Amino acid sequence: MELNENARVDTSQVDDRRGSGGGGGMGIPIPIGGGRGGIVGIIIAVVVALVGGGFGLNAATGGGGSEQGDNTSLEQKCSAQDALEQLDCRNTLYVNSIQAYWRTAMPEAFGEQYRPSKTVFFSQNVSTACGAADSGVGPFYCPADDQVYIDLTFYRLLADQLGAEGEFAQPYVLAHEYGHHVQDLLGTEAQMRRQQQRDPQSANALSVKLELQADCYAGAWAKNATGTADDRGQKIFKSITEQDISQAIDAAEKIGDDAIQQRSGRPVNPDEFTHGTSEQRKQWFTKGFTTGDPKSCDTFGAGV
Ligand SMILES: [Zn+2]
Image (cartoon, rainbow, N blue to C red):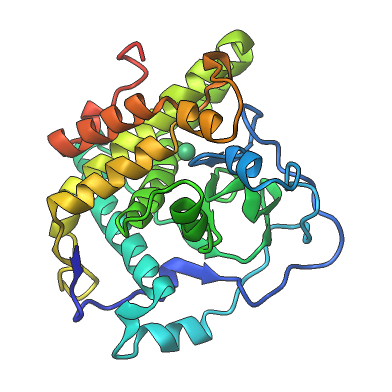
């Protein structure tokens, strides 16, 4: 993968809260898993099993979810010559590419307008409209405030603990979370929550469909990423190679439910799957990538 050094990093699409240190008071812990209004992440709560430290959701600070970060230093950093050597600037540019893609793809595929959503960079803990969370839950999307949340140190965990080392794992993770935003805009997410309430027995199976669809959307983005441009029309990627795509697929496999359960020393139990097996995650990312068409991501109709 080669990024275009002439592309402008649009930091207005992120909210840098890493320096803010959280607000006062105890937040309401986020309901994870199938709860209504809960968060949808890339692996949610399984990271916790790997890194230890309980559920990691209850000690966060802040309460309202309305706090704003300060982008001043990020803005400076990402307009400098060596911006693309910086992890946070590169990740901002990935966000720019993913949203540029959906701006055209959503009306084309689904006849609906895309509404941009910010990615919040936080460190350790953060308050959201879905409740308070800490890094242990991994990157996630909060449907109540339409924002993606990530502690960028997650990538170290992804590489060191889960073995997904390739750089392209990073845009894959972000594209998966933006997949949840698209599902939110299309009403897929709300519809799935209603189904879960009607049929609690199938809650996990429905969650798997939602997650695999987000993987497939990530694949559709990856296929079209080299066509995305910044707000001045400069291409964001110079190239994306087969090796990059393998890295994304590798990451998808490493965070399959069965792989995670095995890694954490637990018996593999399909009833507890919420995100799909390694094989399924690989399969749906690949489907999105092969077709390049988000309409092909109908995990709900496909009897997954
Ligand atoms: Zn997810």
